[in-house]
Amino acid sequence: MKEQLQVLEQEALTKVEIAQSLQELQDVRVAYLGKKGPITEVLRGMGKLSPEERPIIGELANKVRGNISEAIDSKKATIEAAQLEKQLENEQIDVTLPGRPVNVGGPHLLTKIVEEIEDLFIGLGFEVREGPEVETDYYNFEALNLPKGHPARDMQDSFYITEDLLLRTHTSPVQARTMNGMEKKQPVKMICPGKVFRRDTDDATHSHQFTQIEGLYVDKNVRMSDLKGVLDRFAKHMFGEDREIRLRPSFFPFTEPSVEMDISCKVCHGEGCNVCKRTGWIEILGAGMVHPRVLEMAGFDPKVYSGFAFGMGPERIAMLKYGVDDIRHFYTNDVRFLKQYHQA
Ligand code: FA5
Image 1 (cartoon, helix red, strand yellow):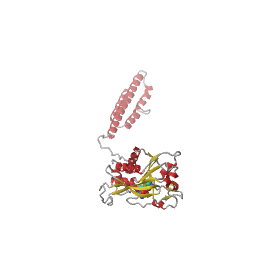
Image 2 (spheres, rainbow, N blue to C red):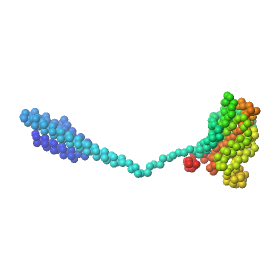
Image 3 (cartoon, protein in one colour):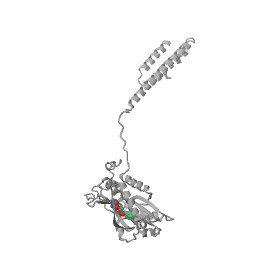
Image 4 (tube, rainbow, N blue to C red):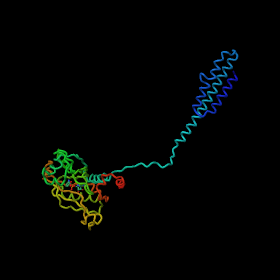
């Protein structure tokens, strides 16, 4: 029996030695140490041994079991370590490989222009206000001295939603809303950027949806020279200290007198070229002194208060500043166009 056990031990240890996988090891364990294995078989037959032999064979059988079990465990650890090593090798990361480029976005050119204009006016003491894009006929027109049937309503072709609601055609209703909303009448100094909508046919310089920035300053003794000073600062800040402005008489129902502001052409400095259509000047915005009727309708006494207002289109300003030749570039969102201005 002793020899039988020793042969079994040798056999099992050889199989452990040559086992290549955890499954093979498990097979060896089941075959030699399992309930139906030869060693258990030997132990079962111990009853037939003499009382002297029994402890010797018992001890040997346990030792053989222990040796086989130990060999299996140690081989198992070796196989597992090798597997781990292989896995680590396969999953190795080459930190020297170049990374995948991350697409970094940037602010839209229009956003940048609007923020630049906001910063300038905040510096001049104006606050930034907002108003609704869906506006009532009253604020979009009537409160601005444009009663129903007024021919000047045709200057801004509108998208009506109901008889009384429309998509605002300009940011000027925010003037009326701001002044009307004040319980106690006191000086107002605000700008208002936002989207506006007109039934204009889209072309290189017109869009049916575009941006405007409104400005309003109402106080005692506000004069036309104040308007001119602020607009001159604005033009020089946006286009360069060497630019001149000029105010031309114009008409808006909500301002009296009304003006259009031009800046001197940066290409020819007033001499006349293709960019300025040989006039030496480029039109930038509409402005004027707030009409006394508008002040009155908003509850301000026009004998005590006066004010100026202006309204500009940031798309056109961006086009002039950066030489953009078509307003539609702002909305078609071709990244090749937008990317050029991320650092501008
Ligand atoms: C107005 O909308 C007046 N509310 C401006 C104003 C405010 C005058 C306060 C006096 C006092 P106008 O229709 O000219 O004015 O538009 C102002 C600016 O909006 C224009 O100078 C132009 O830059 C821009 N603009 C007008 N129509 C379009 C359009 N279809 N697409 C792009 N920009 C436009």
